[in-house]
View 1 (cartoon, one colour):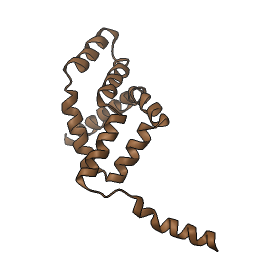
View 2: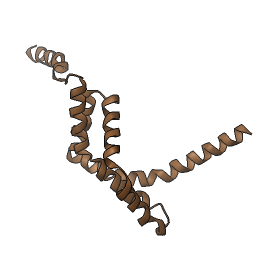
View 3: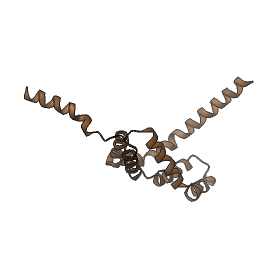
View 4: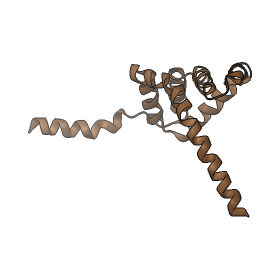
Length: 138
C-alpha cells in the first residue's frame, strides 16, 4: 500500500518538475538546442552530402557558395525564432537534451547523409506534382 501511495504521489508531482513555459525559458532552451546542433556545422555537412548528388564539376562550386556566402547567423536567428514560436519550453528542453546526448549527436552527424538520400526523391516528387498541376490547368 505504501508503494502504491508513493507511486501515486510521484505521478501527481510530475507537472511540478516541468519548466514554466515563458518566452525567457523558451529562449534559453532554444539556445541550448542550438548549442547542441550548431547550424553552421549542420549546413556544412548538408552541403558536403548534397553536393554528392551533383555532377562532379559543380560540387566544389556548390560547397563553396554555401560555405562562403550563406549567412549562417541570419539563418540561426530564423531557426531560433521558429523554435521559440512553435515549441514549448519543455519540448525545447527535450530536444536540447536529446541532441546534446551521445545518441543525439550521433543522429545529427547522419543528418547530412539522410538529406542526401532523400533529396532526389523529394525533388522528383515535387517535379511530378508541378507537372500534374500544369496539366490540370490546361
